[in-house]
Image 1 (tube, helix red, strand yellow):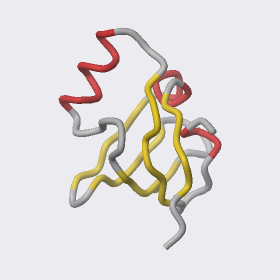
Image 2 (cartoon, rainbow, N blue to C red):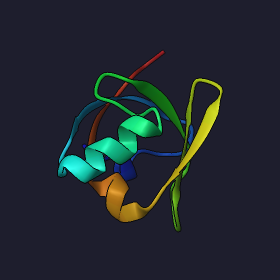
Image 3 (cartoon, rainbow, N blue to C red):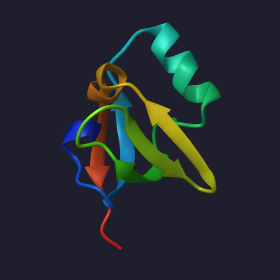
Length: 74
């Protein structure tokens, strides 16, 4: 499932990133790596906003489409 398919409030774990080296580097610098868990704050329209720990990260929809995730049920 792609990150943009999640609903607001869902928690998920990053499975893979379907992009090149540049995309991987950008996401690593922002703290989003494979295996990392996060919560989707907003993503219906416009940019996708997620919370990773105490940090908030804003991603463009194109970038978010390349991130494969798995829902985490708590």
